[in-house]
Image 1 (cartoon, rainbow, N blue to C red):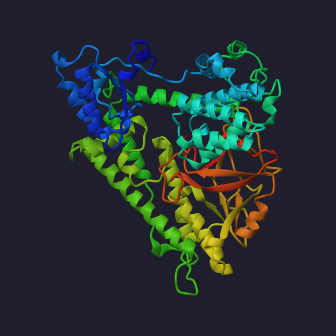
Image 2 (tube, rainbow, N blue to C red):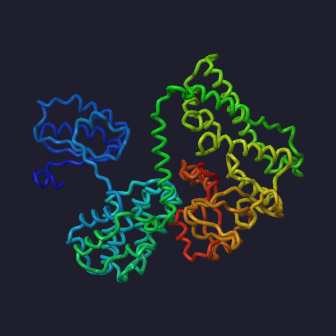
Length: 586
C-alpha cells in the first residue's frame, strides 16, 4: 500500500482475498489489470489450493506483448506445498518472518511503532507499560516454539497482525474504561486474538497462564520483572527511544526461564535438534559397504534373524487364569477382562505381523522371494534404526529407535501374558496398552457396577503413593493402582509425595505407583477446589500433539492427573510445560 501511494496508484490497487468461490473473480481482476495497467493483489493463496493450477495456467499462457507495462500481480501466501513452483520461480519473492531471538523480535516491534502510536493514549503510563508487556508476550510465545512439545503442543504461526490488533484494543479499552480492565484484556488477547489460532485445549490453558504473568497490577510498577531473571524488567515510563535503548541492552542468549520453562528445557531442545540433524546425515549415507566393512544386506539379515529368535509366542485365551475373564452375575465378562481380550487381540496381530515379515525379509535378502516395495522400506528402516512402516501400521504409538522398540515390545507382551496366566495384577502398567483411555473407562465401569452409580456421574481422582515396586504393593478395595508414567518439566519428592522443581540435567522423573480413585462428581468438585493440586495432562508419547478426536481432545492425550504441589500458583507448572508421558524416546 505504501508503494502504491508513492507511485500514486492507491486508486488503482485492487485487493481480493482468495477462498471458496473467489477464483473467477480473481481471474477477471487479473485480465482487467493486464489491460489497464492496474495492480492486483491476491491474498491468502494458501486457502485456495484447488485454484492454484488455474493461476499457474494463467501465468504460463500470458503474452507479454498484450500486457500493460505498469501491470503488477502481487500474491500473498503462507508456506504451502500447493503453491505452484513455476509462479514462484518467475516472480520476486519477499518473506516476512519474525526475527530469531527475543531481543531481535522486541527490537523490530518497537521499530515498527511510531511516536504517534506510542504517545497516542491519554493514560500514558498504563498504555506504555501494557504495550511493552504485550510486545514481550508476543515475542516470548514465538520464541517458546523452539523448545518443541514442552513449549507448545502445536507450533503456531502467530503474526504481527495479532499484536497490532491487540495493541489497538489495549488503547481502546484504556480510553473507554475508568481503570484497566484486566479480565477483559486477558480474555480478548489470550482467548480471542492469539487463542483464535490455537487448536489444542492444553495450549489454550498455557497461553492464558502465560499472559497472566505479564498482564497484572504489578506490571504498572517500575522495575517489574517479566521473568525470574533480573535482566528482563518492564522499562520505566519514558520516550519511545528510551524503550528501544532498553531493548538493546537485553541479553543476546535467552535462558529458558524467560519463557516460563526450567533451564533443563534447553537440553531437551538441543537434544532434539541434534537427533534431527543426525537423522538427516544418516538418511543420506551410502548404502554400499567398502573394504572389509560388513555389507548392509548382511547387517539387516543378522538383525532380522536376531529379532526373529526373540519374537514372543501368540497369546491364547484358553490358557487364561479364571480371574482374568471372570463372569459377572449377569453372565458377561468383567470389564477389565473385556479390555484385556481386546488388547490381547491387537498384540497378537502385531506378533504375527512381526514374525511373518521378518521371515519374508530374510528370504528376500537371500533372493528366494521378490524384494517388494514394502520389504524395501522395512530394509531401509532397519539400516536407520527406525520402526518399519509395515509394523507401525499395526503397532501402538511409540517414538523409540528400533532396538529399544523391540525390547519394549517384549516387555509389553510379557505383562499381557502375565495378566492372562495369573489374573489381574495389583498394579497396572497403563503405558503398555494400545488404548489407555479404554482402561480408564473400564476402571469406571467396575466401580459403577459395584456401587450402582451411573458411570456419567463418576470422575477420577489420583493419589500418588511412595511405593515403587508394582509387584509388592497392596491391591486397593476401590479403584486401581497404576504405574509406569514419567514426569517431564518437574521433579518428584518421594518423601513428601509432591511435585518439586527439576534437578539439574534430570529431564524425566518416574512417577511412583499411583492409586486412581473413582469418585462422584460432588466429591470431586469439593476436593478439586482445594489448593495445591496441579491438573497434569497425560500423553502417550513425548510428541504430545495428535489428531483431534471426536472427544474434543488430541488422540495423544489420555486423561488428567491431579498431582499434589506446594506451589501456590499452579499456572507456574502450566508455564513449565509439565506433563506426564507414557514412555520415553530412548
